Image 1: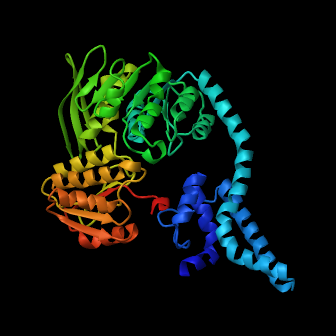
Image 2: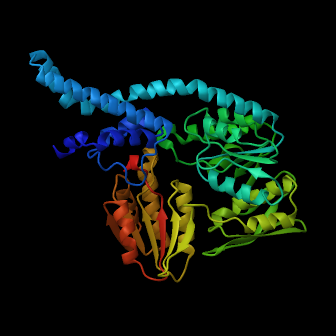
Image 3: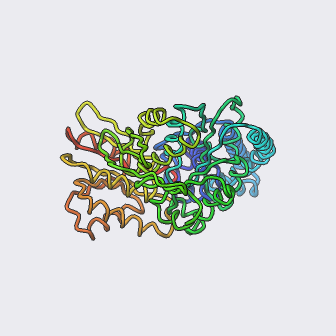
Amino acid sequence: MKDYLTRYHPSFVRALVYMLQASEYNTEDYLAWVGRTKDFRTVEKRKQLKFTGKALALFISAWILTAIAVLIVIFGLTGGDEIANLFAILVLFGFPYALPYVLLLPLFIIKMVQLPVEGILIAQAKAKLKKHPAFKIAIAGSYGKTSMREILKTVLSEGKRVVAPGGSENTPIGIARFVSRLRGDEEVLIFELGEYYPGDIKELSEMVRPDLGVITGVNEAHLSKFKTVEAATNTIFELADFLGGKPLYVNADNEIAKNKIEKGPIFFSRKGVFPMAGEWKVVAAETSLDGTSFVLEHDDEKINAQSKLLGLHNVGPLAAAIHIAKRVGLTNLEIESGVSKTVAFPHRLQRREDTGGVITLDDSYNGNPDGVKAVIEFLGSIENHRRWYVTPGLVEMGEKSEEIHRNVGKQLAQAGIEKVVLIKNSVTPWIEEGLQENSFGGEIIWYEDALDCYNSLPHMTIAGDIVLLQNDWPDQYA
């Protein structure tokens, strides 16, 4: 009864609009979330509703619908007519259940108004990009796209005027809005291509028309939408299909990507870059809490790379960025300077240290199996520190979720992590099982809620501890 009554709480309307916004207005995801929710007063935990034009229109529409329902109930119950009374009672008890669905009608109307406007913006962006003289780079992959984008942007900016969309501007309309802000004198444009359904990368490639592509890897990220890894692979490699004979860099550290296309691309990995013209080998790669360093060699030529990025998994992307920088004409000195300026990006193995000497590695935007494996490897390589691994698990892993999370437990056990903190949900019990099956010798700590966990950590840690925050479930998956 208590859960039912939350549908009558004043926050109910706001909660529904937030759920639509957080679900990116995907009706299937939104309705699934509504169906799982018990208490509509507590859906805004990690983020809050942003009153964009669309959200405000839906918020007003929902309150208008609610006001109409209230008036029907008032007049129906006070009118004296038996049929009117019955209808009013049905509205009184049924409207809170109907509103989440009725709200899809104004959403549909808004989308119908938006479609032609967005179509015009996208067409204008295509025309502008077709004429733009800049060298265009497109990045696709299940993971690592944002990091690759920022590495390239930082390195290439030492010798070129480089711009790239920020945040989540990786859809047709997001890229179109970015393109509308271009001045026309940019020398390099870097695009991150988002993939959610088959055909997405083909559409974005035709829009951007890249001169060079980078595929960062393929794994089970977004598997709940693609259903199979093969479908995700084929979608990501739509970039290769578009490029034809143009340069394509593929992450050879990722077996799926490497095996998908064996001839033609330029492979990059922790070992170096392997184009048709010869090998650039990585020598003396090292990583610590202060950063990552290596030397990239080709014949008698050497480039010293000193980056503030953490983890050897960054060596491959850095090596690819160096090779691309040489391709577009940067000098070795410019390249070395650019690499030295690469730093951890927000919430991607980002280091911070508090006044008590506790080091936090914020990797809360990393929610894919390859990324998890890389950071556990990095955490396991750190000696003379007590190490904490905090996670709610990964989302959108589809039918492979159990296998993936058991494997996370196995990796943690093998790395010898001292403290594993698990936030309760549908997947974290599998991590615990993976830990126990692999003779985990540390301590497992459970929390019901992520915010309670984060608030408790300062009271449990001491100077010298390293706390890795791995992924953060959006509210719609809580």
